[in-house]
Structures are given as C-alpha cells and as structure tokens.
Image (cartoon, rainbow over all chains, first blue to last red):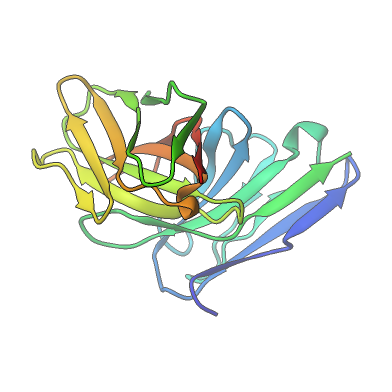
Length: 113
Length: 114
C-alpha cells in the first residue's frame, strides 16, 4: 500500500440500506478526514479525526458516522442511506508539520437509488 | 465561517499560453494556509501549490505560481506554458492554523486546447 486506499471504488445502493466506506493509510498520519464532493459545491468536510480514538464533526455530518480504532483506518458509515447522499466521497490524511498538507485517496462514487 | 469563492466555473487556454485562475476568501483570521488542488479526470486530488499567510513572498512551483494579496483576500493561480496535462478541475482551499476544517471553493474547470 502506498498512500491512501479507499474501497469500494464505486457502489450503487438502495435507499435505506447501511453502507460502510473504507479508508486505509500507510503514512502514519495522525489526522484523517472524510469529504463529499458535489458538483458546484466543491468538497465539504463530513467528519474528521485528530488521532486514533477521537473523532469530530465537520460541515455536513448528518446521516454519517465514523470511528477511529487505530491510526491506519477511518471508516465512514451511512446508517440508512438516502438519495441526497449520492456523491463522490474522499478520504484524506494530514501530514504533520508546518504545511498542513492533506493527501487524498482516489475516492468512492456512491449512488443511492 | 470561512468561505472560498472561485468565480470562474470554466476556463480554457491554448497550449503554451498562460492562464490565471481566481480565488477569493473570507476570514477574520490572521494565520492560515491556502492551497490549490488539481483534480484531473482520474478523480485524484493532487496538491499543486501552498501558501502560508504570514509569508509575503508568493509561492512558486515550476510552471505554477500564485499571487497572494492578503489585504484583498485574494489567492490566484497562474499556470505558465500550459500543457495538455494541465486539463483538470482546480480547487482553491483555505485552512486556519491548527484547525481541521479545510474549506474548498466550487472549482474551476480548465481546458488546455492544442
């Protein structure tokens, strides 16, 4: 593994179903993030985690939950998917230091019907 | 709350020419970071250039440079000698110092024409 991986690459989901998007990084970054990307809106922060064992809410957290059991993994769960959650989801991690650069995974395209 | 505005939804430029993408932001903070990310058709988000607000000198990375005007809250990206591979969505982003909330603009779709 090099960097950040996300799974699945894409998914079509029936409304009301539960879905977990997976994210794994091998850079030992403490901070991790979940964004959703929607046309005309850019990327918006859903949830974040400063370090293993802690999580926080971003700009658009409703309908989503996260956990951070260890440094490498940061799964995002949709408990009961709705069509408005159709989006492209990006996981990111942040390098420590002065630049605060975020590294992004390849994204998951989720369609909720 | 911080907001980031990219006023140009789409732009095009001829290969080898220069193009400037605009970005303005709104904040009351004095210490923050600004970024430009590139998203080609592959969907991967790639950092192009970064700027620390306390630095007056404009950042430069090869053919990419910024014009950072702190008082005007403006952070434009200049791409010189445009190449076909520069075709992508470009996102401007803002992040406060010691904060996790990175705010993105809506993006500018740049097409480089041969």
